Amino acid sequence: MPDIMHLVEIHAPVERVFKALTTQEDISNWWTHDTKIEPRVGATGEFGFSDHQYVITVQVTDLKPPTRIEWKALSAGPAWTNTTIIFELRPQGSDTHVAFAHRGFKNADDDYARPTTRWGYYLVSLKQYLETGKGTPDPDDSDF
Image (tube, rainbow, N blue to C red; front, side, top):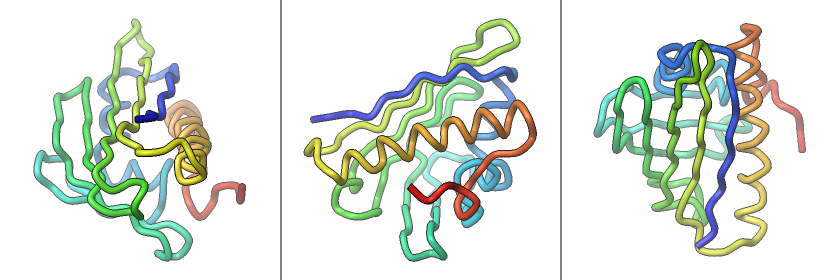
């Protein structure tokens, strides 16, 4: 099964990066403004894109502050359903390395290629948000 993987260095402490990946307010500043999630295991989160035309529903399956976040995709189209999204945070002095993985895609096809590109874009948005205070979440993102 193909997996999406990215590694991003962010000039911010690990606790701040963890907060940006787990709270509704912070996620809305780098991924999508249409965000509903609670930072607790078992919680269900919902992320809307393109005026809620595309919705990703996840369940928080693991939280280990401040180094690990794991979500199981419950719905978001057939390619995403039952995939796992993992953020591993590795402190490096005052910086944090984010090891991202989206695992469990059945095929390396267009439904895999689109999120590969988008995750790279949104992880850069996360980096910009934490380093400058301004990310580019949906709908402020580029149309690509």
